Length: 102
Image 1 (tube, rainbow, N blue to C red):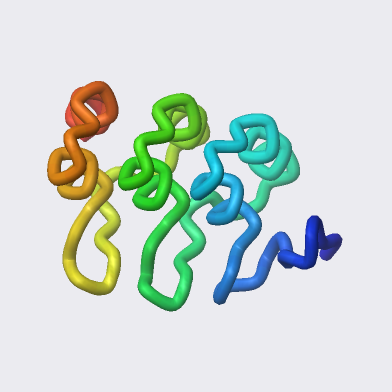
Image 2: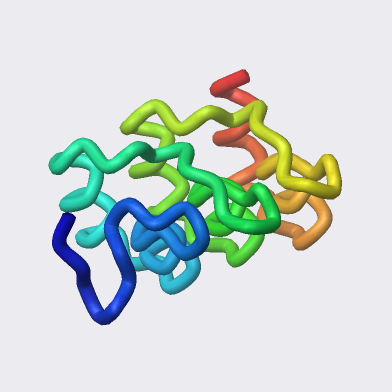
C-alpha cells in the first residue's frame, strides 16, 4: 500500500490514521476512510485513532472518526477508552459526543 510522509497506510505499529488523529488532520482522516483503511487499527500501546484524537482534543477529527463508525468502546493497553481520556483531559464536547454514541 502507498505511504504518506514515510508512514504506511496499513502498518500496525504506526498507522497513518493515527498520525492524522494525533495532528487533527481531518482531510487526511477522511481520505484514509474513503480508501477503506481500517479505522480501528491499533498501535503498539493498543490505541486507536479515536482514542488519540479524543486525548488530544481534536473534536473535528473525533466527529469524522465517529462518522466512519470508529468503535467507542475499544480500550488501549492500560484499559482507558476514548471517553476516559476525553474526561480526564477536560474535553467536554468530545466526552458528550462519545457518550451519545455508546
